[in-house]
Amino acid sequence: MREVASNVFCVGGTDVNWVLVRDGNDLTLIDGGWYGDTEAVLDSIGALGRRPEDVRAVLLTHAHIDHMGALTRLHEQYGVPVYASPREVPHAHREFLEQATPLDIVRMAWRPSGVAWSLRIVRAGALRHLALPFVRPFPNEGALDLPGRPFPVECAGHTSGHSAFLLPDAGAVATGDALITGHPVTRVLGPQLITDRFAHDPSQAAASLDALAGLDADVLVPGHGEPWNGSMKEAVSLARSQGAGG
Image 1: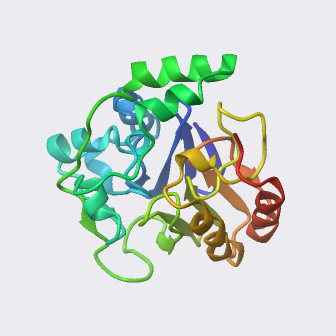
Image 2 (image 1 turned 60 degrees about the vertical axis):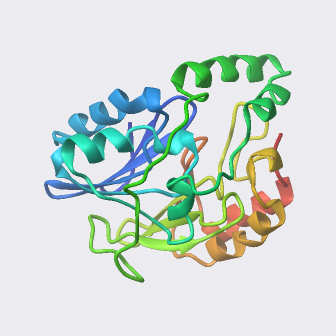
Image 3 (image 1 turned 180 degrees about the vertical axis):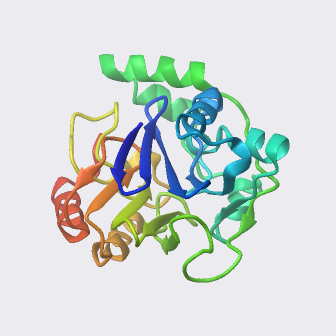
């Protein structure tokens, strides 16, 4: 766990990140790793001297299973509400599915690093069916009344309702999979689009970078890869020059 900006913590799980935002005794959690990362998510909360009950809400960037894993436990055992974009809520409910299939994963596992990654994520729950019927739309437009004053930023493409979250007090953006900095299926490092094979609409994902480029922040906290320091305009420019990795 790294404090990447004031009271903003990036935590690495099984090749995926989640974000904790602290305000006094209260926390906001952004994303929740794989199902197999559930205990690690709870441990990261404890590492800040907090309890799961101190999580005011979970914000879901998008409803892929590598970001949803701990949320059922947090909601059912501790009563933590979970919010997502109104367009992403039915995806979280599994009224439809915009996600790579097991066959897609096999096709990406031809490199040695891909084989190791595939084995890790299978152990972490990649083959599980996961639906979150309790996910609700954001309670209001604009900044949310939660630790860090997170401001949802629509950046569809990876999924139809993908959101990033600007944390204005810290000058940071939790980008989910709209803008990453690395992934085991590619050798590319630094700001980049995730491989097209993982994106529901790659052209829309590329266009949605415009929504991130104008944000006033100098810390990028991605869903995959290492946190990155620099302006979001520079991050987007680098991503456009890289194209989609993999």
